[in-house]
Length: 312
Image 1 (cartoon, helix red, strand yellow):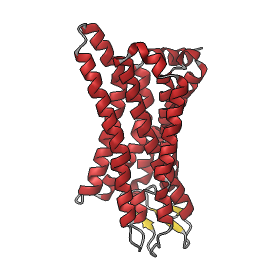
Image 2 (cartoon, helix red, strand yellow):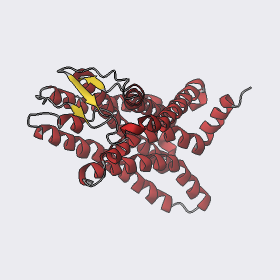
Image 3 (spheres, one colour):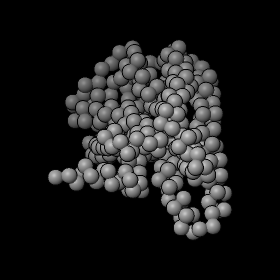
Image 4 (cartoon, helix red, strand yellow):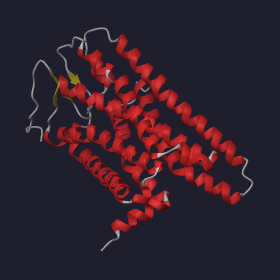
Protein backbone atom coordinates (compact mmCIF):
# COMPACT_ATOMS: atom_id res chain seq x y z
CA UNK A 1 0.00 0.00 0.00
CA UNK A 2 2.94 2.32 0.69
CA UNK A 3 3.99 2.03 -2.96
CA UNK A 4 0.51 3.00 -4.15
CA UNK A 5 0.93 6.74 -3.57
CA UNK A 6 -1.31 9.12 -5.49
CA UNK A 7 -0.55 12.15 -3.33
CA UNK A 8 -0.17 15.31 -5.43
CA UNK A 9 2.26 18.02 -4.43
CA UNK A 10 2.38 21.72 -5.19
CA UNK A 11 2.65 25.16 -3.63
CA UNK A 12 -1.06 25.26 -2.75
CA UNK A 13 -1.34 21.67 -1.47
CA UNK A 14 -1.49 20.41 2.10
CA UNK A 15 -0.61 16.85 3.08
CA UNK A 16 -2.98 15.11 5.51
CA UNK A 17 -1.06 12.37 7.33
CA UNK A 18 -4.06 10.41 8.57
CA UNK A 19 -3.07 9.01 11.97
CA UNK A 20 0.68 9.57 12.50
CA UNK A 21 2.24 6.64 14.30
CA UNK A 22 -0.35 4.19 13.00
CA UNK A 23 0.47 4.35 9.28
CA UNK A 24 1.14 0.61 9.15
CA UNK A 25 -2.30 -0.08 10.62
CA UNK A 26 -4.30 2.36 8.48
CA UNK A 27 -6.07 -0.49 6.67
CA UNK A 28 -7.19 -2.07 9.95
CA UNK A 29 -8.20 1.28 11.44
CA UNK A 30 -10.31 1.96 8.35
CA UNK A 31 -12.57 -1.07 8.99
CA UNK A 32 -14.35 0.27 12.13
CA UNK A 33 -14.39 3.76 10.60
CA UNK A 34 -16.09 2.44 7.47
CA UNK A 35 -18.58 0.30 9.41
CA UNK A 36 -19.55 3.17 11.75
CA UNK A 37 -19.98 5.50 8.76
CA UNK A 38 -22.28 3.07 6.92
CA UNK A 39 -24.35 2.48 10.08
CA UNK A 40 -24.70 6.23 10.64
CA UNK A 41 -25.83 6.80 7.05
CA UNK A 42 -28.37 3.96 7.18
CA UNK A 43 -29.76 5.08 10.55
CA UNK A 44 -30.05 8.76 9.70
CA UNK A 45 -31.47 8.24 6.20
CA UNK A 46 -33.98 5.75 7.64
CA UNK A 47 -35.07 8.36 10.18
CA UNK A 48 -35.45 11.01 7.45
CA UNK A 49 -37.39 8.56 5.23
CA UNK A 50 -39.79 7.44 7.96
CA UNK A 51 -40.53 10.98 9.22
CA UNK A 52 -40.99 12.17 5.64
CA UNK A 53 -43.42 9.36 4.76
CA UNK A 54 -45.51 9.38 7.94
CA UNK A 55 -47.88 12.34 8.28
CA UNK A 56 -48.39 11.55 11.98
CA UNK A 57 -44.69 12.31 12.58
CA UNK A 58 -44.85 15.78 11.07
CA UNK A 59 -44.49 17.34 14.50
CA UNK A 60 -41.94 19.79 15.99
CA UNK A 61 -39.99 17.10 17.86
CA UNK A 62 -39.55 14.96 14.75
CA UNK A 63 -38.66 17.96 12.60
CA UNK A 64 -35.87 18.65 15.10
CA UNK A 65 -34.78 15.01 14.82
CA UNK A 66 -34.59 15.44 11.03
CA UNK A 67 -32.41 18.53 11.48
CA UNK A 68 -30.17 16.56 13.83
CA UNK A 69 -29.99 13.70 11.30
CA UNK A 70 -28.98 16.13 8.52
CA UNK A 71 -26.20 17.61 10.65
CA UNK A 72 -25.04 14.09 11.53
CA UNK A 73 -24.90 13.05 7.87
CA UNK A 74 -23.02 16.21 6.90
CA UNK A 75 -20.58 15.90 9.80
CA UNK A 76 -19.56 12.31 9.14
CA UNK A 77 -19.51 12.78 5.35
CA UNK A 78 -17.19 15.78 5.72
CA UNK A 79 -14.58 13.63 7.49
CA UNK A 80 -14.88 9.88 6.88
CA UNK A 81 -14.78 9.55 3.04
CA UNK A 82 -11.66 11.73 2.94
CA UNK A 83 -10.09 9.71 5.76
CA UNK A 84 -10.85 6.45 3.94
CA UNK A 85 -9.10 7.80 0.82
CA UNK A 86 -6.00 8.32 2.98
CA UNK A 87 -6.27 4.86 4.57
CA UNK A 88 -7.04 2.91 1.39
CA UNK A 89 -5.38 4.78 -1.48
CA UNK A 90 -2.77 6.96 0.27
CA UNK A 91 -4.47 10.07 -1.19
CA UNK A 92 -3.04 12.52 1.30
CA UNK A 93 -2.95 15.70 -0.78
CA UNK A 94 -5.64 18.34 -0.46
CA UNK A 95 -5.69 21.78 -2.05
CA UNK A 96 -5.84 24.95 0.00
CA UNK A 97 -9.37 25.60 -1.28
CA UNK A 98 -10.49 22.04 -0.51
CA UNK A 99 -9.01 22.26 2.97
CA UNK A 100 -10.79 25.53 3.75
CA UNK A 101 -14.10 24.18 2.41
CA UNK A 102 -13.83 21.05 4.55
CA UNK A 103 -12.96 23.16 7.60
CA UNK A 104 -15.92 25.47 7.00
CA UNK A 105 -18.41 22.61 6.74
CA UNK A 106 -17.01 20.80 9.79
CA UNK A 107 -17.18 23.80 12.11
CA UNK A 108 -20.38 25.29 10.66
CA UNK A 109 -22.25 22.00 11.05
CA UNK A 110 -20.94 21.64 14.62
CA UNK A 111 -22.34 25.09 15.49
CA UNK A 112 -25.60 24.22 13.71
CA UNK A 113 -25.82 20.95 15.66
CA UNK A 114 -25.31 22.86 18.90
CA UNK A 115 -28.25 25.10 17.96
CA UNK A 116 -30.44 22.07 17.18
CA UNK A 117 -29.63 20.42 20.53
CA UNK A 118 -30.39 23.71 22.31
CA UNK A 119 -33.76 23.95 20.51
CA UNK A 120 -34.52 20.33 21.45
CA UNK A 121 -33.89 21.20 25.10
CA UNK A 122 -36.35 24.11 24.77
CA UNK A 123 -38.83 21.72 23.12
CA UNK A 124 -38.63 19.40 26.13
CA UNK A 125 -38.99 22.35 28.51
CA UNK A 126 -42.20 23.53 26.82
CA UNK A 127 -43.57 19.96 26.61
CA UNK A 128 -43.11 19.40 30.36
CA UNK A 129 -43.51 22.86 31.89
CA UNK A 130 -46.20 24.26 29.52
CA UNK A 131 -47.90 21.21 27.98
CA UNK A 132 -51.21 22.98 27.34
CA UNK A 133 -49.49 25.69 25.28
CA UNK A 134 -47.05 23.37 23.49
CA UNK A 135 -48.96 23.29 20.19
CA UNK A 136 -49.21 27.08 20.09
CA UNK A 137 -45.64 27.88 21.21
CA UNK A 138 -43.85 25.32 19.04
CA UNK A 139 -45.43 24.98 15.61
CA UNK A 140 -43.77 23.35 12.59
CA UNK A 141 -43.35 26.77 10.97
CA UNK A 142 -41.66 28.15 14.08
CA UNK A 143 -39.29 25.18 14.25
CA UNK A 144 -38.37 25.73 10.60
CA UNK A 145 -37.65 29.40 11.34
CA UNK A 146 -35.49 28.46 14.34
CA UNK A 147 -33.60 26.02 12.13
CA UNK A 148 -33.01 28.75 9.55
CA UNK A 149 -31.77 31.13 12.26
CA UNK A 150 -29.41 28.43 13.52
CA UNK A 151 -28.06 27.90 10.00
CA UNK A 152 -27.52 31.63 9.41
CA UNK A 153 -25.80 31.94 12.80
CA UNK A 154 -23.47 29.04 11.98
CA UNK A 155 -22.50 30.53 8.61
CA UNK A 156 -21.92 34.03 10.01
CA UNK A 157 -19.78 32.81 12.91
CA UNK A 158 -17.71 30.24 10.98
CA UNK A 159 -17.18 32.07 7.67
CA UNK A 160 -14.40 34.27 9.16
CA UNK A 161 -12.30 31.16 10.00
CA UNK A 162 -11.40 30.21 6.40
CA UNK A 163 -11.23 33.89 5.41
CA UNK A 164 -8.68 34.61 8.15
CA UNK A 165 -6.63 31.54 7.19
CA UNK A 166 -6.65 32.40 3.49
CA UNK A 167 -4.82 35.66 4.27
CA UNK A 168 -1.98 33.95 6.17
CA UNK A 169 1.41 33.07 4.60
CA UNK A 170 2.23 29.35 4.82
CA UNK A 171 5.64 27.77 5.31
CA UNK A 172 7.24 25.19 3.05
CA UNK A 173 6.26 22.46 5.52
CA UNK A 174 2.58 21.83 4.77
CA UNK A 175 2.24 18.45 6.44
CA UNK A 176 -0.83 18.39 8.70
CA UNK A 177 -0.62 15.60 11.32
CA UNK A 178 -4.34 14.91 11.08
CA UNK A 179 -6.90 13.17 8.88
CA UNK A 180 -8.99 16.30 8.24
CA UNK A 181 -8.45 20.07 8.09
CA UNK A 182 -9.02 21.27 11.63
CA UNK A 183 -8.85 25.06 12.08
CA UNK A 184 -5.93 25.20 14.51
CA UNK A 185 -4.07 22.32 12.84
CA UNK A 186 -4.01 24.33 9.60
CA UNK A 187 -3.29 27.65 11.36
CA UNK A 188 -0.17 26.15 12.97
CA UNK A 189 1.24 25.54 9.48
CA UNK A 190 1.42 29.31 8.93
CA UNK A 191 4.58 31.39 9.16
CA UNK A 192 2.52 34.44 10.17
CA UNK A 193 0.92 35.63 13.39
CA UNK A 194 -2.09 33.44 14.25
CA UNK A 195 -3.11 35.27 17.45
CA UNK A 196 -6.34 36.50 15.83
CA UNK A 197 -7.15 32.95 14.70
CA UNK A 198 -6.59 31.59 18.21
CA UNK A 199 -8.68 34.31 19.82
CA UNK A 200 -11.54 33.97 17.36
CA UNK A 201 -11.59 30.18 17.85
CA UNK A 202 -11.91 30.72 21.62
CA UNK A 203 -14.68 33.30 21.07
CA UNK A 204 -16.69 30.75 19.08
CA UNK A 205 -16.11 28.06 21.71
CA UNK A 206 -17.17 30.22 24.65
CA UNK A 207 -19.74 32.57 23.14
CA UNK A 208 -21.56 30.19 20.76
CA UNK A 209 -21.14 26.68 22.18
CA UNK A 210 -20.87 27.95 25.77
CA UNK A 211 -24.11 29.95 25.58
CA UNK A 212 -25.92 27.02 23.97
CA UNK A 213 -24.81 24.70 26.78
CA UNK A 214 -25.82 27.31 29.35
CA UNK A 215 -29.29 27.52 27.79
CA UNK A 216 -29.59 23.71 27.78
CA UNK A 217 -28.54 23.59 31.45
CA UNK A 218 -31.08 26.29 32.32
CA UNK A 219 -33.84 24.42 30.46
CA UNK A 220 -33.12 21.20 32.32
CA UNK A 221 -32.89 23.04 35.62
CA UNK A 222 -36.44 24.31 35.06
CA UNK A 223 -37.55 20.85 33.89
CA UNK A 224 -36.16 19.20 37.05
CA UNK A 225 -37.89 21.83 39.20
CA UNK A 226 -41.20 21.12 37.43
CA UNK A 227 -40.76 17.34 37.79
CA UNK A 228 -40.03 17.62 41.52
CA UNK A 229 -43.36 19.39 41.97
CA UNK A 230 -45.29 16.55 40.29
CA UNK A 231 -47.05 14.53 42.97
CA UNK A 232 -47.82 11.47 40.86
CA UNK A 233 -44.88 9.06 40.61
CA UNK A 234 -46.13 7.70 37.29
CA UNK A 235 -46.44 11.18 35.78
CA UNK A 236 -42.98 12.04 37.10
CA UNK A 237 -41.47 8.95 35.46
CA UNK A 238 -43.26 9.71 32.19
CA UNK A 239 -41.88 13.26 32.19
CA UNK A 240 -38.35 11.97 32.80
CA UNK A 241 -38.68 9.41 29.98
CA UNK A 242 -39.48 12.16 27.49
CA UNK A 243 -36.06 13.72 28.23
CA UNK A 244 -33.96 10.54 28.33
CA UNK A 245 -33.08 10.46 24.63
CA UNK A 246 -32.01 14.09 24.50
CA UNK A 247 -29.96 13.75 27.70
CA UNK A 248 -28.15 10.68 26.28
CA UNK A 249 -27.36 12.50 23.02
CA UNK A 250 -26.16 15.62 24.87
CA UNK A 251 -23.96 13.64 27.27
CA UNK A 252 -22.40 11.59 24.46
CA UNK A 253 -21.56 14.67 22.38
CA UNK A 254 -20.31 16.74 25.33
CA UNK A 255 -18.14 13.97 26.82
CA UNK A 256 -16.44 13.25 23.49
CA UNK A 257 -15.93 16.97 22.82
CA UNK A 258 -14.59 17.51 26.36
CA UNK A 259 -12.12 14.61 26.14
CA UNK A 260 -10.95 15.76 22.71
CA UNK A 261 -10.47 19.37 23.86
CA UNK A 262 -8.70 18.45 27.11
CA UNK A 263 -6.26 16.04 25.48
CA UNK A 264 -5.57 18.59 22.71
CA UNK A 265 -4.80 21.44 25.13
CA UNK A 266 -3.38 19.73 28.23
CA UNK A 267 -2.35 16.24 27.13
CA UNK A 268 1.18 16.99 25.92
CA UNK A 269 2.34 13.57 27.12
CA UNK A 270 -0.41 11.74 25.18
CA UNK A 271 0.54 10.18 21.84
CA UNK A 272 -0.52 12.08 18.70
CA UNK A 273 -2.63 9.20 17.39
CA UNK A 274 -4.70 9.25 20.61
CA UNK A 275 -5.43 12.97 20.07
CA UNK A 276 -6.54 12.33 16.49
CA UNK A 277 -8.68 9.27 17.25
CA UNK A 278 -10.48 11.09 20.09
CA UNK A 279 -11.09 14.13 17.87
CA UNK A 280 -12.43 11.94 15.06
CA UNK A 281 -14.73 9.97 17.37
CA UNK A 282 -16.66 13.20 17.99
CA UNK A 283 -17.52 13.28 14.26
CA UNK A 284 -18.22 9.54 14.04
CA UNK A 285 -19.84 8.15 17.20
CA UNK A 286 -22.76 10.62 17.76
CA UNK A 287 -23.94 10.38 14.10
CA UNK A 288 -24.01 6.60 14.46
CA UNK A 289 -25.78 6.42 17.84
CA UNK A 290 -28.19 9.39 17.66
CA UNK A 291 -30.77 7.68 15.39
CA UNK A 292 -30.40 4.44 17.38
CA UNK A 293 -31.02 6.21 20.70
CA UNK A 294 -34.09 8.04 19.44
CA UNK A 295 -35.34 4.96 17.58
CA UNK A 296 -35.16 2.85 20.73
CA UNK A 297 -36.42 5.42 23.26
CA UNK A 298 -39.22 7.04 21.20
CA UNK A 299 -42.16 4.62 21.00
CA UNK A 300 -43.99 6.33 18.14
CA UNK A 301 -40.85 6.49 15.98
CA UNK A 302 -39.89 2.93 16.88
CA UNK A 303 -43.27 1.62 15.74
CA UNK A 304 -43.10 3.50 12.43
CA UNK A 305 -39.57 2.25 11.73
CA UNK A 306 -40.71 -1.28 12.52
CA UNK A 307 -43.58 -0.85 10.06
CA UNK A 308 -41.09 -0.38 7.18
CA UNK A 309 -38.25 -2.66 8.28
CA UNK A 310 -40.53 -5.61 9.10
CA UNK A 311 -42.63 -5.28 5.93
CA UNK A 312 -42.48 -8.37 3.74
